[in-house]
Image (cartoon, rainbow, N blue to C red; front, side, top):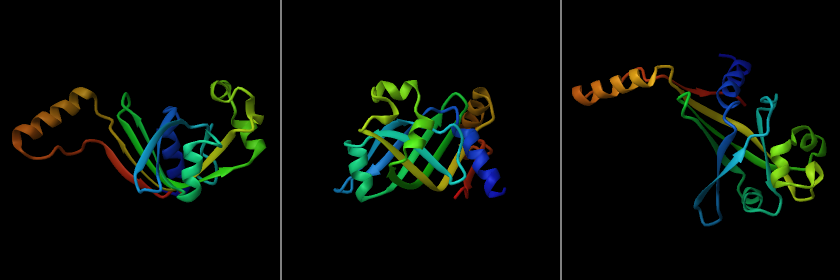
Length: 166
């Protein structure tokens, strides 16, 4: 799979999953996660995901000192799971904020794209991995029941792949 194909596959898996759990590290080493809405309309050429966050909030403070983050997506209806590791940075790009701003963002930032506390968190993807199951729930349950009876782990429970998107 080419890098472009891998980016397309990644976007196909996450585009309909509006919320990702962004995990970052605090100064004491503890990991903390926050649900954030992915603002992208597509995965850009830089393999970057965008999120709106408060500039004066916890996430902005912590990624300034440790930019390594993970964003996890789960679409349980489609049995699709994605883990993205990357580097986060707060960007001051008024044009990008304007491009991505929407009605849902206005709920959190009522002053609009020009809200002085509106932070644009850019996560440059370094690594991605996904698990995608095509079998119906019934087939999955059958495979798991068979495994429980035979004592052998289930096989062919869907596609698992690491992607080179950066």
